[in-house]
Image (tube, rainbow, N blue to C red; front, side, top):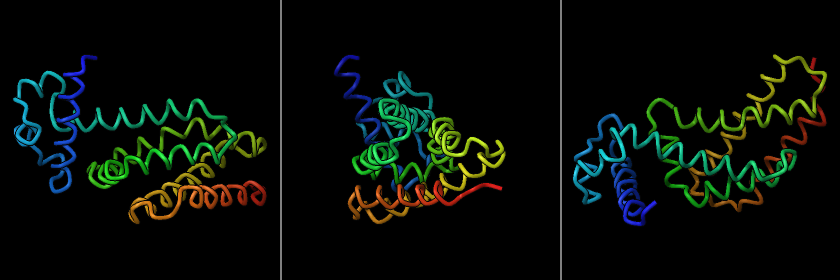
Length: 184
């Protein structure tokens, strides 16, 4: 991609996040984004259909990047996986916070959650091969909701706790479940 196009898209995204601080996406206007980004509306529409489309593409970019990084890590290495995720959140905390909080319908949170579903169901299958499929599904949701809760709390506190401490806590919780949960 041409560097001018990358720079223009970057300015549009920065403007979007600037507006998102005080304005929900459904109230955002393309004109408002363009005014802050200092681009004309024709330029905006060359790349995006609307503010919602821009948000969707930003979400996709962030999740695609995270997914590509996670694919390179051993599935069973929870510490490496969590470290990678928390590092990405730490490096982009304001964007993650706004997308988790302001995506309106919880769409980003759900997409974030779903990103890990299939991959982590394999881990549950490895640890609990005899557990009925329905129970594996419930177990995944129990663990994932807890992990997302920890991540959100960590973000709300501006990522003050060191990444390795948060990761160690999450891994310890999952290890406890793996050691102690026998299923039905």
